[in-house]
Length: 208
Ligand SMILES: C[S@@+](CC[C@H](N)C(=O)[O-])C[C@H]1O[C@@H](n2cnc3c(N)ncnc32)[C@H](O)[C@@H]1O
Image (cartoon, protein in one colour):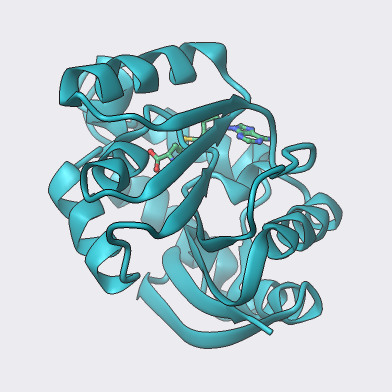
């Protein structure tokens, strides 16, 4: 899991910067879907939020719990997926999901977004960061080849070229304009859409 954090670039400072942007502070209720090793959830709990981490992996959750224990904060951990997590407490203020929605094919992404909207209060915030394509479809081959050629790190230092090739071949990353339609149909207004690179981006949304 330490290697996972290195590859994933887990960075509590970056998580804090995101929590600042999302206005997460004491008393805010937050759910992080596919929380991985739990850095965002732990940073949210440190500031007094009621923070919930959801992930399908028991290994990830065990690591996340140990992280919370080291930080001496209480957080809520749930072994569940995007589709079957049912938030049984009060509707929350913020739902986040980073680097994970691409694991679902589009039909199931839409169901996951509906589930996320269902756990948010009206006016609540939904934040999505992922591999999201903003290039023109006609440029896909060239853009994906460029990503694979430049993003891979040497073995042992991060995700390798082979990992990025496998991502393109086997995972379900899609275009920003496809996600836009899905977010709107799930009941979100899109506040902002940012493409940091042609292959990565974020959406900040409000639940209607
Ligand atoms: C690349 S990691 C990202 C973790 C974390 N969000 C981060 O930014 O570091 C993807 C995570 O998605 C989880 N995952 C995979 N399929 C899932 C599903 N259907 N529902 C919820 N989590 C899932 C994995 O266990 C893993 O922790």
